[in-house]
Structure formats: C-alpha cells, structure tokens
Length: 294
Image (cartoon, rainbow, N blue to C red):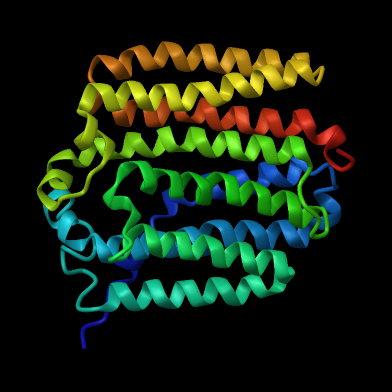
C-alpha cells in the first residue's frame, strides 16, 4: 500500500485554518474574567484541541468527501492529485477525530462534550447523506457555530471551571458566530463553477454573485453593530469606539469587494476579516472585568 507524503498530510490538515477557532477560544477565555496565567494548562490544551486537532480533523474530513469537487476546483489538493493515495484521506480524518476526543477527555465533561459536538458538526458538514455544505445557508451556519461560537463558549466555560459562560460572553459568542456565516460565504466565490457542476448549492450559486456578496457583507457587519450598541449600553464606551473604528475600516474595504466579488473575495478575506476578528478580542477584553460575575 502506498503511503501518503508527510508534506501532503500537513497540507491536508490546512494549518492556515487553525487560527480562527484558536482565536475564538482565547477570546472566550479572556471574556470569562478568570486568570489566563493561573489556568495556563487549560489554555494550552484548549488551543491545541481547537486548532491542530478538531479544526484539522474537519479539514481532513472535508477534503475526503470533497475530493470529486476538488478535482475540478483545486486539482492540486493532496487527495485529487494522488499525493495522498487510496483511502488514506479517510483514515487520517478518522484518526485525527479520535485523537481529538482522547485529548478532550483531559478537559473534563464540558471539554469532551464540546469536542464531540464540534466533530459531529464537522462530519455532518461534509459527509453524505447529511452534507450540510450542500446548502450554503446551513453549511455556513454550522461552520460559524463550530469555528467561532462553540470555541468561544468552550474557552469561557473551561476557564470558569466548567460553569456556564456569563450572559455578555454568551451573547458575543452567538453574534460573532453569525458574522462568521458571512466569512464562510467569502470562501465560496472561488469555487462557483465546481459547486454548480457538482450540485453544491452555495450562496453564490443560489443567489448569484452580487446578491451573495451583499448578503455576506450585511451578515458580517450587523452583528458587529449590535456588539457596538451593547458595549455602549454596558458603559464600555472606549471599547465601543474601537469597534466603531474597525467597522468603518471594514465598510471601506467592502466597497472594493462588492465591485468584483469573485476577484476580491480573497482580498477581503486577507484584509477585512482580520479587522472583524480583532473586534472579537476587543469585545472579550471589554467584558473581562465583569465576565466572572455576570
């Protein structure tokens, strides 16, 4: 049996995608109001779990079940190119998922359950007959919940010793999960032709390029405006001002994205999305002071 190349396995696990859930976990941990340094072991395991394990598992799973689509859209990916031969892509996805559950057991019941939910979403996103990604509405929502909301809530709960997150923290986790729906839509503009041919009903395929792009922008911006309003209501005006500045910068970049969504989707992912995720950390610090007692 041919063995996969180590470099191909690394490409399959897509390290570049690990950052969002790790960032969300860190935001949730900070929002809890509990000491990061006093809980550094939990932080370390949680960051390892959310990025190099659970997120990597989801990438391997997605690549395996998307191998026929990738043969059209991205033929140089490890599986369609043959660098990961036979069923090795599936074996890696299963092994990484089981390893994730093993590591999660060190975080107690909450960590294990959260990891189980994240992995169920990851497999349901890609695997027939559920295959949530067949519909851009449900698939992007599942990704947003898993990458942002669930990771944020997990970080907040674990730092709080397994208690439920504070209401402000939980609210922000939900809002940024919704924003992530728009972020996920950005990824769909590069695969419109392949998705259409393979019957994947991404939002650009369903709505058309221009309408999907406008929807993505609204979905990214509106939750951030709600965060801004809540921070003002909670008398966190300095943090609200920072969020307002980040929103304005995003609106400027969105004008370029909307002028040619297919051409500039990657541009906005590289320059606009980092502003949104920076706002996540600003929001986490804004509620840190009362996160432990709200």
